[in-house]
Length: 349
Ligand SMILES: *Cc1c(COP(=O)(O)O)cnc(C)c1O
Image 1 (cartoon, rainbow, N blue to C red):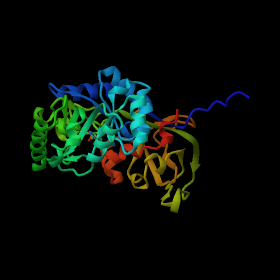
Image 2: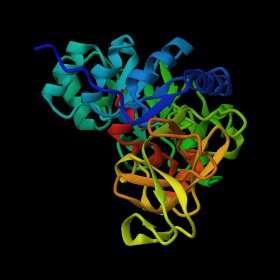
Image 3: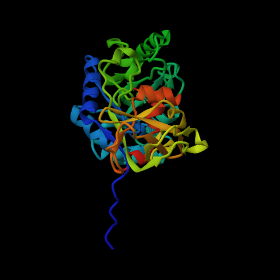
Image 4: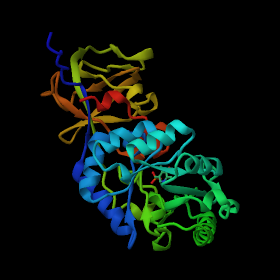
């Protein structure tokens, strides 16, 4: 039996490659003498490793960050393994063995991890120092520990907790990190995430690690002019219907047609990051025409008013309102959450 061919989807997420490349280049320029890497964890913040990593590579990026070992193979399919860093480091011998077998580089995050990495054979690694975010990383007070001086550190890293705010914490973390840099031998130093790049050249050091801004998020106003939207989301009309005056739409019948009208049903909803709260007042679009959402987003169905677009029929593609900042605010999510809740269905090709 031949493999069945998957029919085309009725939802699509398109990554604008030129916008993604331009965002990386803009962040690389804003990093001054430092070069920009790329945080590609969480499947490139929901936009898809396969769509994004080759674009970042071709734009000139040579440092990629993932969180889990399970994310490595997807990235090394496109870039050399020694350019891939794993932010969670190594928790056990199996992860050390995997790191050495594939050639990706662990970000050592504790004295225990340092000891484990050395005792299983050592080799080049990165090192995370905690300067105040208290997630992962060795303490500043452990910088002179023998387990740390035994490491062969390429990137010495720390992470800013509040770079998206004008907080005195930024300066405090920079100072703490500067002190640590003098204590631990390393080849390169890295502190700034996307928002940190906007804090200025003193934060950029040798390598910056933008994530959200690559994908169109604007964590600080200074970046607004430099960052372009990357994700375009579209949904196809599944069917059109005629409503008579008095007919209602969706869960709880919250919309009632005031007169006879033509509507279209789209297959999109909660699982696609389109939460119920985004229904009222929102509209889909087609060639500049506004097609208001009628009634509640009902699980994975949305009904729109086609009065402004009588030419549209089943199969036609509508633009989903997907400005990250606006959509995030409507969902009461941060832009990070907004991007990463984009469901698998949107990425189905
Ligand atoms: C996710 C992450 C980044 C990217 O941060 P953004 O705020 O998305 O730019 C950088 N460094 C580390 C250690 C991270 O975990």
